[in-house]
Amino acid sequence: HGLTGLARLSLRSWVAVPVFMACAMITATLSGTAEAFPADVASEMDAPEWKECLIWSACTIGVLAVCAVAAGVAGKRMAPESAERAKVLGELVAGLAFGVGLSVSTMTRPSKVAAFLDWRSGAWDP
Picture 1 (spheres, rainbow, N blue to C red):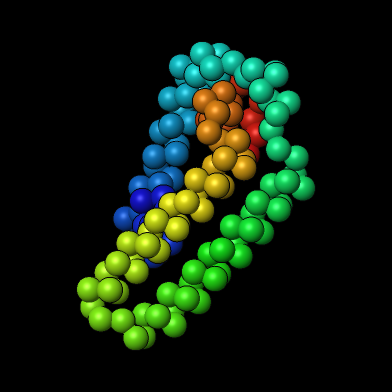
Picture 2 (tube, rainbow, N blue to C red):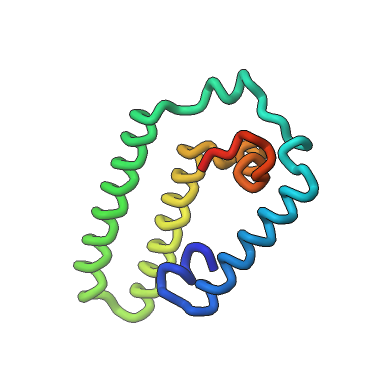
């Protein structure tokens, strides 16, 4: 729902995602999830600086733009079975871009996710 449903403006996704996030935040706050996953100071110091994040983001956007143009040009000349392969490739590229976004924002760390969801943690960092 969060990636593809919101992107294609699905009403069901626009309802499901806020409900899911609200339930996750309420659960994490009431259960004290951030206390179960305390931040490791040493690994937090390894988090990328904003300039490094900007470079990774620009590179990802550039790769996505090139892929989108190539897919648009090639899509007009493709047979239907090749178009299906191109669709799968597009989904793979979108997934990789999402993974890069998670990595750059350090949302791959359980302590970061727990602090984001638990409002009482005092470490809320979007």
